[in-house]
Amino acid sequence: MLDLHTRIATLSRPTLLARAARFGVDDYRRSIHLRRILQSDTLPRHGHAIMQLLDIEAEIDALRTDQSANYRPARHVDVLIAILGEAQLMRATAPQLV
Image (spheres, rainbow, N blue to C red):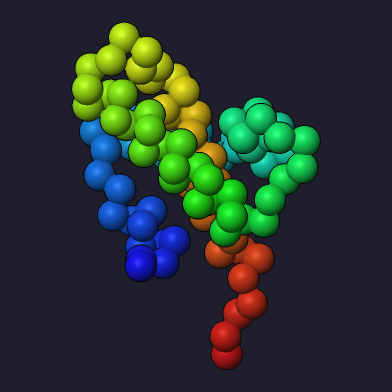
């Protein structure tokens, strides 16, 4: 099984979605955005949150590739922003090896 950073790095999405997510990640606020996306009052640890977000994103991407009428690009970008934001926070809080 791939580690989380590898799974994130190997996501291949259309350029417009990826670019929108990169622009939005600076405004990511875990307490607001993650709670809304996961529809939960308690926030999981970064790794667990990323796993949940990757599952949600896979479902959304399936809607996109199936050209479903239920696909919402804004929601897709929102989840991609959360994935990138959680990955940044996880890297920032990881113990530094000397």
